[in-house]
Length: 420
Image 1 (cartoon, rainbow, N blue to C red):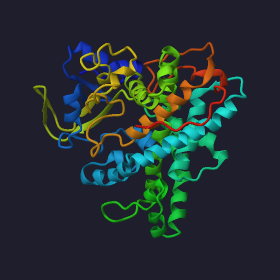
Image 2: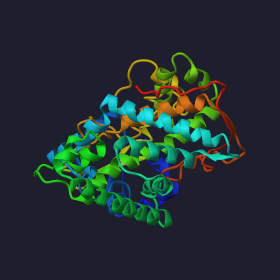
Image 3: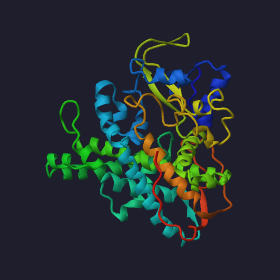
Image 4: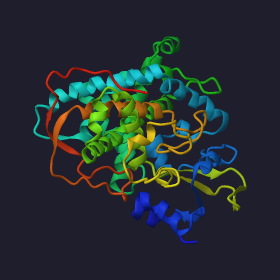
């Protein structure tokens, strides 16, 4: 069986959908980095993949991904009761509507603050600016100390961890160095806050204090470095919403008719639908993977134990059987009945109590807030390269989306953040 590692690197997001078309829709069997792989597709595959009796995540993630994106000892590397216990920490912090709304409000405040500066500048690279906005907002919301002088470096590091996880060469090395630097920044802060007494830490309601005081199943506090890893697993994915915010700007530029709906009377409801369509339409995660826990059967095919099982995310979000005319940007898809849980999977799927990303609500709330904010701004989109290369993972418009002449409408004041 031919190894597909090089074609994956060359084709990026298009690799798995292309392989699936060539297989006539059957599960794709191949090898990646010398290991047996089977790739699954469809809502039923989502349910199959996220059943812990079928697929394990522990030991499945490649070392380079752990050392850049998630961190050693992270919740993503656990299974079973250990995973459920640690995951409950994040579910409680990231899915509580009041907390989610507070973060969206913080983002709105930071956007207003940043806009005052943008109005005095000749040009603004939206990707860089949104990374700084989200870095300030999530640190303040989570109660993680951050001096203003640290914002630029911290934002770049959090972006680098995401930008380099699927890369080889300089981007990957940059991501490793960024993770090391940020873990070394946060671990002493955990030790310092614990030195005041764990009871005092647990008594606070900040996310930072809650993670610092968390005890695993054995009753022991997380080592300071592991606590730093889990704090980063809140900071990093929140700042990773930068990719979606730039896609939102791209969508508004390509489809300006959405501005009126986002700024109208039903703006918050439309912003939710717009955010969901941005997540569906634009490329983010191409697939997720795990290891077959035992000999399995799928679509009449045998999956041997320890085979790498991939779940096609990008292909599922563009499946014409689920999304009519899937390459047409249409927020109206999300203005009707609720979307089935296993159809929209840009950040993975499965049940909330399992391995499903606990930060989905945060992503949608933050993205909704940013979309409404951008829709009411006046700015010029400079001549630039707005192509989105599917070969690159993760991808974004090549230019970073440059705007100039930023102006708020006369009399425009601060508006409440939007969140579902």
